[in-house]
Amino acid sequence: MATSTSFSYCSSLFLSILIISGFVFSEMVNSMGINYGQIANNLPSPDDVVPLVKSIGISKIKLYDADPKVLKAFANTGVQFIVGLGNDYLTKVQDPAQAQNWVKSNVQAHLPATNITCIFVGNEVLTFNDTSLSNNLLPAMQSVHAALVSLNLDKQVTVTTAHSLSILETSFPPSAGAFRQDLTGCITPILNFHSKTGSPFLINAYPYFAYKSNPKQVPLDYVLFQPNSGSLDSGTNLHYDNMLFAQIDAVYSALAALGFKKLPVHISETGWPSKGDEDEAGATPENAKKYNGNLIKLICQKKGTPLRPGSDLNIYVFALFNENMKPGPTSERNFGLFKPDGSPAYSIGLSVSNSSFGNGNSSSNSGSGSGSGGLVNPITPSPPGTSSSGYLAISSAAVTERCHVIGLIPMLVVLLLRAASAQAF
Image (cartoon, rainbow, N blue to C red; front, side):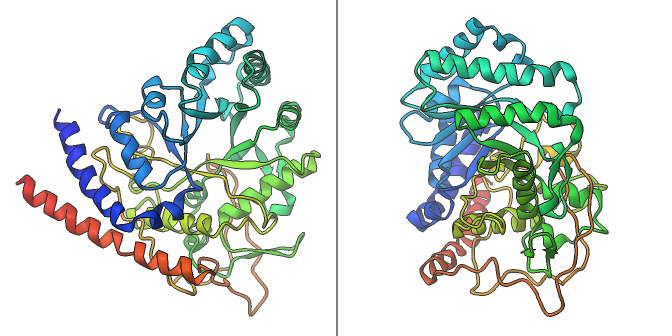
């Protein structure tokens, strides 16, 4: 009861601030997705989460299961859902009857009220190096898709799977992106499945892990979308001023190398922790604010990557809440934008200038990494005289003005939360 009361009070204060911003904040982030993980024992009820998600303008949510409480809570909200079918189900759902029962209970039962658009079957299966899992992945995906077809749901619900960036053998320069040779035999049939069914290729990409594994070689500004000299891909002559876009384009290059140039890529996870252990470099509230805040601004610009400037940035930030029961280092429990009581884990700080952000120094070395650390490769320095071209600037004066208005929100958050703290005492 105490947790629920605390959430309601703090959340109502925060939501009141969001209301001040009106449609402006929603317009900024309505193309952004969020991962809603629930490995915790102190999270608010899904009913309490709905107004929070709606007020910050999130239009897409990715679940790691098909929690009926969440799906029912979000009925008639219009929020799009990707639901998950865990690795432990891969063998079971190869049975057509089991697959159909799962789809009926976890997807069809919630349609059309809840806008479920995709099922991801298995998470980072191919990088577990477990043949019993990897050999079952595609048959499970095919079986779930067949169940959707039999229920006449395949036109509105697609089937995919999420991969770690470590499925790449080469990620730098982006034009040389290539899948691991030992995985090509598994990946190619999956790509054929995507091509035939029209489903997206999902990749979990974390520049944070590349920085964490080699902070002396990877420039922090480069991974945080701060102004920096960036790197030049000699294969395409394209300039990169942030690692995430380099990672995304490496995936596009790897797909093209196997003949799947037109396959859509969605970033199913990316984020930055606000807290970590002593040996977890960069895990601070300040860096989390820069990474996620600058990422939102990039999404706001509706620009693609250097290799695919016209493509939508379908990005799902990890994660909605801090999750106190996740195993592993401290960072794993601190990727949330919000604390369990509904208050911000840190201020995202959406104010923006007309030119650029931060005071980052130029650097000649960086790298590209994977969600599990991956290899860090040196970045080719840009030619003399080139620098970041203000990529975080909003080109539209109208959007810039709105961003300035939103920049007042963090200050108001602090004031109201202080007032809440005073009232609590």
